[in-house]
Length: 442
Image (cartoon, rainbow, N blue to C red; front, side, top):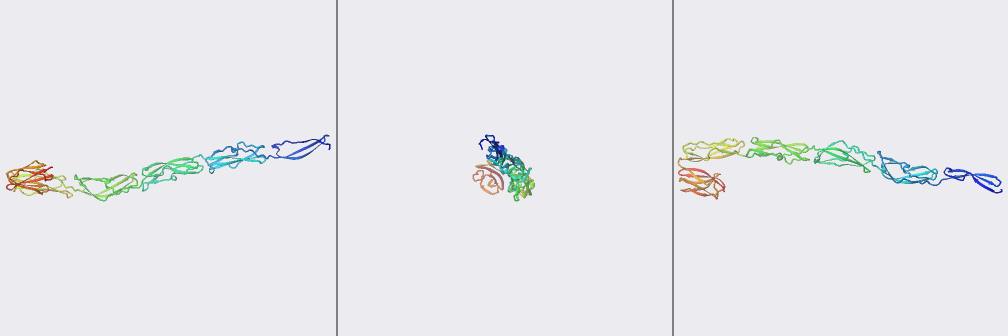
């Protein structure tokens, strides 16, 4: 009524502790010292958002179970608020193999007044744990009829694992052929989606259990050579024997033959491949002897005897012991030249013959000479006066020339003669004859 001299309030400063409703009392005083108070409510609010700060992008690793986790503290980089932060949260804190790579993680900071603010960073999820490669125990595979075999990584894997997932499996050798017979080390490599890999090895033994195909030639005839022997080889018995790999050996149960083997023989061929597999086939070899026996005359040829002295037969022998038959005549009472035939037949029926000339002479001179012998251009005949005719025969007994005259001492050209052995038959007066041999060499 007289005028107010002062007004005061009991609270004029506020801070975060005063958030909410506050009763403020106003006291009014006049000059006489009279005063009066009234009160009102002052509500203190905080509408300022926190200042959110996120860490720079970072990387975390999945563990052996394929998991990883973070908290808001891992993302916060010193976020602040004018009154104080009451909570921090992130929108993703757990990660697994599906999150490999870059992930955006948002941090939300809230104060006591419910003001909030967010920031984001990139969390890269990595898997650096190698798979666990597990290989099967050593095993054996068989080559097929083409000499081939193959396996895949699945055949080598024995439950390989990874904390995430296996992306691929590979082996360093999956195809095998005849050159791989025996033990082969095969390595399995297991790779996950992050490129981590691990390897293990096992032994794959390659075997060939397929027998060769033994093929024998058709039955055939084998001739013994002039010495009475013959040889065959295992390769000559095979008729294109084959194998899925390679044939290492050919063997036969009999390869040499002699005169005691004349006849049929069943020959067995054994074919063995590089895997040790063996098979056989058989054929019949008929051994024959086509070489006639060789007859060797013992003593002189021609054999000259004098009329009235009698004849003593000279012997002969064969190289194989075949018996000799002799075709001889009685001629001791007559002069002239006689042929004795020696023949021999061996066990195989081969026959040969040789002849001996027996010259029966009167006590008178019955003789002629030939020189040079052997002859290349000509030969000269010198005979006694009673040599009246001369005939030339080849070894086949064919007369090719004849000469008649009072004196047969002459030179005969051999220009038209073939090389070889010839017999000259001289005729003496009155009825004697004599064979002599001449060799022609040009």
